[in-house]
Image 1: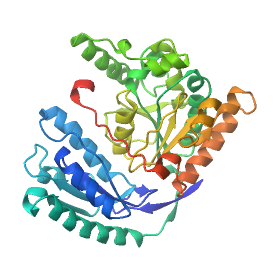
Image 2 (image 1 turned 120 degrees about the vertical axis):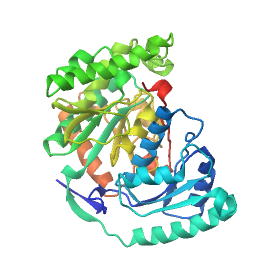
Image 3 (image 1 turned 45 degrees about the horizontal axis):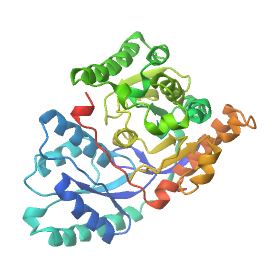
Length: 386
């Protein structure tokens, strides 16, 4: 199976060809937004971090920013800093350069003469980058070049019964074709970790699965909290999910049935092809952001209650098996898996259809979140990550 993509100078293959306006800290976010508003073909993110952070917290922010810059869907990066933040532009440049050799230009607001002058200068460079990017043509690549993220949000019983198994079947198909499928949301493995650990390719990987779950639970215990105080969410409960374990048993279906070959940290990139686990929060926007920073070109996102989330550099395909949700949220939903619930189609049939949908998106078809310009970003912090 093939798709049409863009070859990057670092050897990766993107399915989009974007110029990214990247703020080093919160103080550069508005200027990035102003430039993106001026120059078609650019995207920006809103970064609420980058200053007033302890060292380990700042490192997570830097890892995410550098990972987003290195994502193969990005042609080039314009980094904008205020000048006095903890996340200094020179440091951020080095971290990005360690990950990719794409075009990169930096502007520092305090040195350029303020917001208006920085916006003007950065816009000129952005236009040049967009023009350069437009000269690239799509080439044919094997599907093994794809890294596909899987996530869920606003789950209800139809998620565990149908949409997550459909995604799992798609994941199995991808792995069999030599691609990489990322399973994430560590806190939503709790109660089903023993089942997931049996899927590990080695005893060491099984131990890693238990370790990342214990780390979350220990952290919450140390601050006098319990994950079950907020999970399942009110929306999950209203939809019919009664316990965290019930939610987890549905969540892990997204990984399918192939061996788990790697467990790695938030916002890092997989080093192996196949089914892998990224250690992310259960908060879906922070989880999706981490997966994009890890290099996934596309995300498949299941939702029973309905979700509107998207990502500025990674297309997010929404799948639901709740027909009522699909009909009510037509603006947001891309794939209707409810025929599985009604017994009209099998999980295998819909898994194949979903894989074809992923390839269509890789070839340029816009899912609803991308069409509407949904661009949610949330960067996990040490207080809710360790």
